[in-house]
View 1 (tube, rainbow, N blue to C red):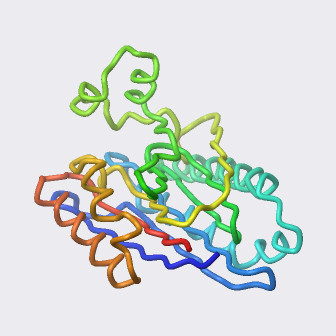
View 2 (spheres, helix red, strand yellow):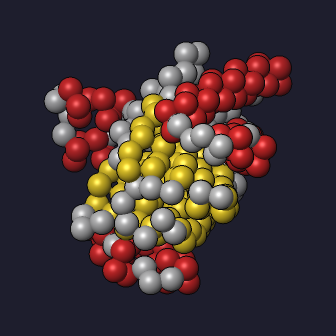
Length: 253
């Protein structure tokens, strides 16, 4: 399987810093191609959110360069997922201890995807999301938020959740959760588009708008992917989104 990937981020309309951090790593090896994409949203309202997200990104970049080559000798996505989970738990402790030392609050979400030939693994914490776009838009991850939990319980509708003041209240995040339990998903990679995004990217646009602009038929090359992502980011800003806005696109075929 072959990959084309792009990443776009914008500080948005209101914030003075961009607390989102993004990473794409793409390489060839004897068995084919491997790609890793990670998006982290440093916690808005908490100081040093950008430090938390960048810390996690740097750790996974180092893992890709130094540890992944050994994993590719006999690839087992379940085992890699367990190692990612352990890494995230260690980073959680590291960031908590840093915050305690300097008397500051910081944290970050995490959504990362590793694709090795025709198989993928996703690690997830918080409300950044992973989607698959084929003949429709499919959300692969579940938000770990108060409102998502209430929707699942049936005590809140999606429309109520959209305007609820607790919309951004996370149940888990790296650097602020005493007991962190990352969600690990594995699956078979299909031809199409995989998308990772921060919550700022998706709040002010509909799933139909995302599909219309980012479906595989509209993404012929890297430049088109970038242009279409920037179009949606501009649309989000026009609708007065207050958060940072970030998206990663991976076209597979």
